[in-house]
Amino acid sequence: MGRNLQNKVVLHIGIDDIDSPLGGCTTHLASILVESLDGRFSFKDYPNLIRLNPNIPWKTRGNGAVALRVLVEEDSVSQVVERVLDTVGGYVEEFMHPKRNPCVAFYTSNNVSRSLRWFGVKAIRDVITLDLVKKVVGRNGVKFECYEPGLRGLVGAVAAIGVPLDDCDYTYELLAYRCRENWGKTRLVEDESVFKMDEETRPHTFLNVDWEEKRVLITPRGVDPVLYGIRGEDPGILIKAMKMVKIGEPIERWTIFRSNQGTDMHLQRVPAISSIRVYQSVIVRGKVVSKPMWIKGGHVVFRIGDETGTIDVAAYEPTGLQHIASKLIPGDVIEASGGVRPASSKHDMTINLERLHIIKLAELVEKRNPKCPKCGKTMKSMGRNKGYRCPKCGFRTCKASKIIIVKKRDLETGTYYPRLRAYRHLMKPPTRIGREKRKPPTRIYTPFHGT
Ligand SMILES: [Zn+2]
Image (tube, rainbow, N blue to C red; front, side, top):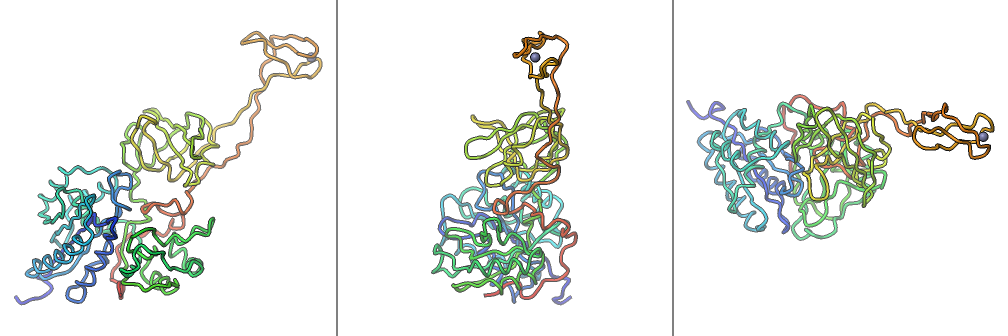
């Protein structure tokens, strides 16, 4: 048999922990790799930008890893691996930083194995030990190169390979990169053009602008090589949006990634409060058991409980959810969604609220002393079970009891979302509800990258 499609395999290339305070970035390196491989080889998919567990304290900025999936002939796999290692090695050397543990992983298979898929989802929802990643790598014949002692970057590189986004919801992001000489300088992106782009492309694009503050959300801060990132439902709308954004500096390159961003993939519904574990992101139902408390910084904390236990829930000021949370009262039934922070000397294990669903409101009652039947003045209690006395006419009685008044609640049932500027990568914005995808794309839009 000669060279034909039968001999082609998918080479999955996972990379992570490239982000550096010196300017490097995992997606930027991925974008360079895409350019160097395209034309010579064909891509099976857009590069996949996989956001991992946002609650891990030792995560990289944004905790995003990338997987490239390239169709190569079986006998040229090693040649592609060499080529990738050359590019990654050069990039890593340039932006080396002691706090980073850059890693690239390779896996050759037309289908991603079940154990890799399981590992990928676990890396989004839970904590991964290095023993576990070693086991998964061994079992699946994953080859890898880590550029610093340690294997932390390997977790993300392997996890990205394990999330091929073919059996779940997904979105796209077009990332545009700056020329080297502009890294660290103010980003020259015209706000007005972003407002206009948002008005004309949403809800097919999302998280472009926080209209409450008229703040542009597509530009990151700092030395990051990203000029802007536009998130949306399909590649065509992203290209249209890119053309609408006016900029005052050149774009070095741009690439469209397919991603689990904006899908809520990190959230898992737990059946009981006692089954919640730290660093997970959970959706849990419970009854409010303590009066919400305002704490320093403008945050609100309250406690919920079920038959199995209780847990604190914190609504942080940037989310804007604290005003709603402060109106809850004991007895209200809610569903809290958010990341679970471990206990510290200052607080118990806490859910950092990222969405609040109020299911049922308790009756808010106020008890008042009864009125004097003789003169109408409000009577005073003479002590527990000792009856009431009128301060005006002196009338005493043991038969009167407190008047119960049901007050109107200044709160409605329903789902409350954070302010757009408080959105983290994986959180699904409300405008995406009903737009969830169930099938992977059947073809790759051209062009999906450019310079
Ligand atoms: Zn009286």
